[in-house]
Length: 277
Image 1 (cartoon, helix red, strand yellow):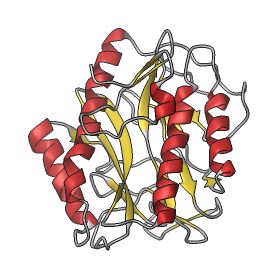
Image 2: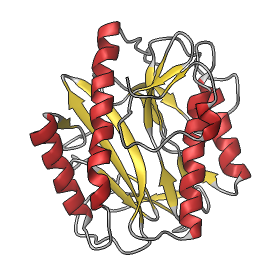
Image 3: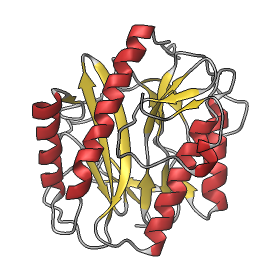
Image 4: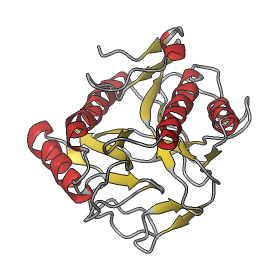
C-alpha cells in the first residue's frame, strides 16, 4: 500500500486556506438552491465564483482517474436518489428535492474538499431525518479522530449510528487522504471495526464523507460513467469535511461563516477545533 503523507506546517497552512475557500463556495451557493433552478446553473454560478472571485481552480473539471472519462463540470450535484458524482445539467430542482453539492477547489496547489446537503423548498420528513442522521454520522466519525486512534474507529461509529437509525452505509466509496493530490492514501471507510486499519498520527489530513441511504446500500452506475444512484431508488445523503489530525485531537479545515454548526454532542467534546480562526 502507498504510504500516507504527513503534512508539514507549510502544507497545513495551505490546506487551511484551501479548505476555507471550498466551504465558502457552499456558503455562496446556498441562497440559489431553490425550486426552478437547474443543476447546470448552480455549476455555472459556483464556477464563476471560484474562478473570478476566489482565484481558485475547480478540481473536478476535467478530472480523469484511470478508467474514467474526464468529469465535465466544476461541481458535483447529487439529487434525491443520486449517491454521488452527479453531473450538473438540465435537471430542474422541484419543491422537496434534496441535493448534495460537493466542492473541491485548488489554491496554491492545495485541495480543499467539502460537501453539504441542501433542500429545494420544503423537504419531506424522511429527507430531513436522513440528512440529519448523515450529518451526525459524519461528526461522530470526526469525533473519533485523535493520535493513536484507528481508521476503523471512524467507520465503526458511523456504521453503528446509521444502521441503528434504520439506514444503510454505501461501501463502494469512502473518504480519502488529500493535500497537493486530490485523492491519496489513506482510504477512510465509513463502516468497519474499532481498533482496525491504520493508526492516526498528527499531520494526517483526510476527508470524512459518509454516504447514507434510506433504503438498501446497493448502488448502480449510470451510463455517463460518473453518476451513482441507489439501486432501489431510495434517497441518499452525504456530508463531507476535510480534517487534520492534531497533537491532541482534530481540526476541521473546511470551515466558513455560514457552515452548519456541529451537533451539540460535538461542541461539548475536548481537543477539537471547529471554529474559524
